[in-house]
Image (cartoon, rainbow, N blue to C red; front, side, top):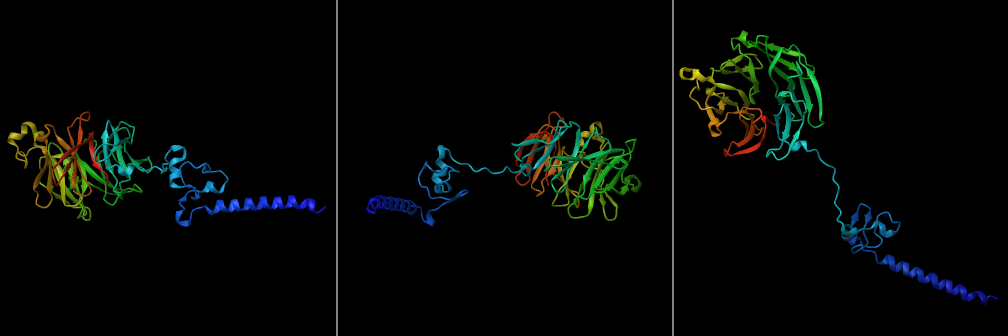
Length: 369
């Protein structure tokens, strides 16, 4: 009776032993630790292209192991890592106006992005952090717009006691707004300094009472080494004064045939400023103002020795050059060729080599801090 069951039991034992040996052989063929390749799904032990059991999600031991070759050859399609897109804004070094809107562009002008859609922007200034633009729209009376470049968000700022804003600037520390305005008769001018956060008026200065000028202030910039602001004021010709922010005292330079456009060098006490004697017209033959015979162009005006050094001349282009901006390292000059808003071009000069390249069409360029 017992002999009847011995043969089937022995056959079952042989089958089980055979299966065990086969499985052991299968796992003993896995790669050593030095051969395993880490993947997002584990460590690889499936060599060769197009393995049959390397599909992610298949519930086998091998489904967690993919070689580099396997990754590149699944369905004969290379695997490309997906990297979250980075913000492109930091690559833009220049802002400018075109058609009443602000654009950003790269230094070579090959990539440009439109920031606004108002068609009414007349002037803008970068905040020192390079992340905010403040601009003025002629359809928003007594208001500036604070535009967050990174977040693409804008906030309107109501300006206190401003009748007519001729120009504005942001202090080097980003804490104050300097607002130049004229009275209703567009003759006298005043400078109001406002806390940029609270919009509280800190002081109002009237250059006329100081014996400086009765003409509108047309431009403002800040010197890098002394706590003073440079003001350009214009009537028939333009003059230049320095305002010491500690004492609120003025230092007036003799009237020159300056233009409205001016920018401070960030690394020395000089300004890049227009010199435009051609604007005098019929007055020029009898002109006694310094610079009457100086060719139109953009010049470096040294605030200490009052020397003018030409940077770029209008004669080089057959059109006026204006709206200059100096890069933060002091090495490059942006400027506008042509006065027409519809037909102006922006160019860049390397100040060390004097090489000039085209950037883009537009006007009022400004380097990003």
